[in-house]
Length: 226
Image 1 (cartoon, rainbow, N blue to C red):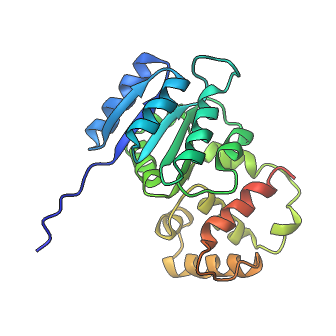
Image 2: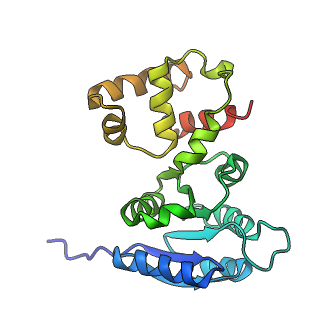
C-alpha cells in the first residue's frame, strides 16, 4: 500500500510592490501552494531561491537594486541556468516579446511569462504557475498576439495552413490539445491531426530525447521577429 503523501508545490516570490507581493502570496496559498520565500529584491530572490530550491519561482522583471533596469529578469535567467529542474514564471507589465524570448532562450519547458493583470484571474494565474512548476510553459496571450503581428509569414512556417498556425499559436500559449480543441471549437482528434501535421511540416522527427511540442513552440518563437 502506498502511504506517500503528495507535497504541495513550493514557490518563491520576487516582487517589489509589497501589496502586490502579499496578494500573490495569498492567492498561491489559497490555491494550496506553499510559498517558502518572498522578497522585493532581485539579488535576495536569487539567494533565497538557490537556498530553498522550490518547484517554481514567480519573478517581477523590474526589482531593486535596479543596476540594469531588468534585474528581476536577469535573476530569473540565472535561476534557469543554475536550477534547470525548477520552473520560472515571470510577471511583468511589459508585453515585450524580447523579454519573453530572453527568458525562454532555447528551452520552453518550465518557463512562463504573464502580464501582472492576469493575477486578477485567480484560476488562470494559479493554473499557469502550477503548469510551469510541472515543466510546462505559459505565455501571455498578449505576447502571443504581438508575435503573430508581422504580416509576412516566415518561410519556415509558410507550409502551415491557417488552422495549423492557429493550433501552433495556442501551443505557444501553453494550451494542451484539449484546451486547444475548446478554444478553436474543434474535436480533440482534429487537434491531434493538426499537431501531427505541424511536426511533419516543420521536419520534427520523433526522437527519444527530444520534445517535439516544445521544439515546435520554439520554432514559432524564434521566427516571429523575422
